[in-house]
Structure formats: structure tokens, C-alpha cells
Image (cartoon, rainbow, N blue to C red; front, side, top):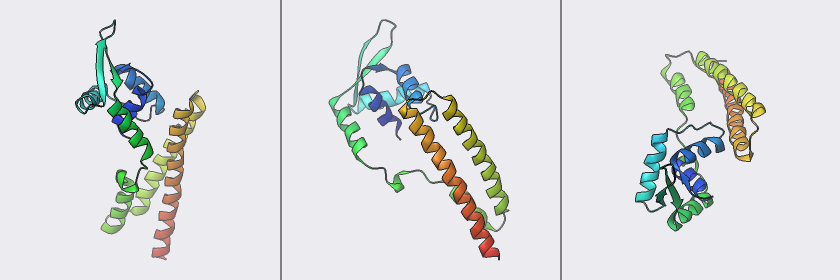
Length: 170
């Protein structure tokens, strides 16, 4: 997800200042995507330059509040209506690591897989704890569920890697 589009989505609900956007973004993503406040203001500056948001007058505490523009609403609608393609996602470093471990012949591929399995299990346990502990709204729950499903899929893929290695060494 782009930070820019996430911030536009939050601004579509009303005027916000930078720190408020940061807090709501992190709350909406179940704190799985922490933002640096500098990122927030840099993104707001770019969105202002692109005509997607407008700064308003400072509030009583001196904070500049931002409002989404019509161009921003159009961009947000375009983003929501456009599916995310497989090629739009970052490369999966784990897949590349395992493939290169196999291709190099230098690495203990089973050890690479086992180290990842342990790390993924820890992450899965932490995600499940967070889900149980969190009085999460629907947005946070969906983010946590997505992370849990991805970790479970990673475990299945690691099982598959081991099976393929065993099959090829048999």
C-alpha cells in the first residue's frame, strides 16, 4: 500500500494534521507499518505539490490541517478501483534467498529453510498474540489476519521447499 493513498483515505474522512495522520495510519494498519513523522510531512508536501491536498490555516495549537481536494478524491477512487497486480508487489527476498542458496551450491539450504521456519513461527505467534490482545477494529483485524495468512502460507511453502529438495536428492 502506498503511504500517499493511505493518507488520502484518512483525509477523505475529514481534515487532519500530520501527527494525527500518522497515528490513524498506524492504528488502521494494526501498527504493522510504522511511519516516521518525516515521511508523513514529506508525503503531504508532495501531495500538495500534486494538487491532491490543500493545507489550511493552522489550528489553535499551531498545527497545519490538510484537506483532500477533488483531484485527491479522484486519485483515491482510482486507487481503490484498480487491482494490485502481482508485478506491483516487491520481490520476495525469501524466495530469492532460497533459490540462490540452491543455485550456489555453497549454502546449507536445509539450514536456511529451518532458520526461516523458526523466525516465521515466532512471527506467527506474535501476530496471533497481537490479534488476541488487540481490541481491534475491522481495519486492524484485517491487517493482522493478512499477516497471519501470509506467515501460514510461508510455512507451507517452506514445507514444499523441503519436499522438493528431498525429492531431488533421493
